[in-house]
Length: 86
Image 1: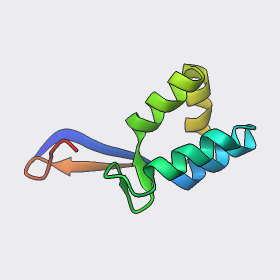
Image 2: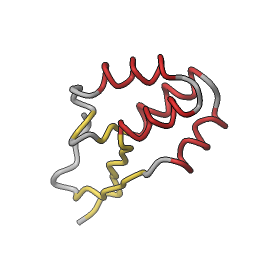
Image 3: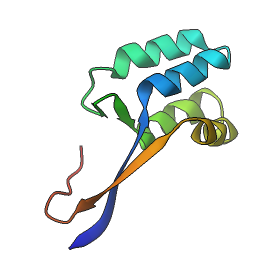
Image 4: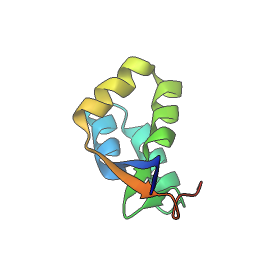
């Protein structure tokens, strides 16, 4: 049984690399330091909604859409019995 809950994540190092390439290495360093050992990061993959909030707040929605095109996003469908909120 599936309840349509998905776990969508982006590679934290790829996100920080993208920010560095865009000329925002200070922000990349801060994000990497804050989230590399955070509960929202599993195996180097950080929740997409968290990254989106940061990028939209720092820049705008268009910047996040560009990031989405340039950085790999992984999505796992979570079964009904395993679904929970972090």
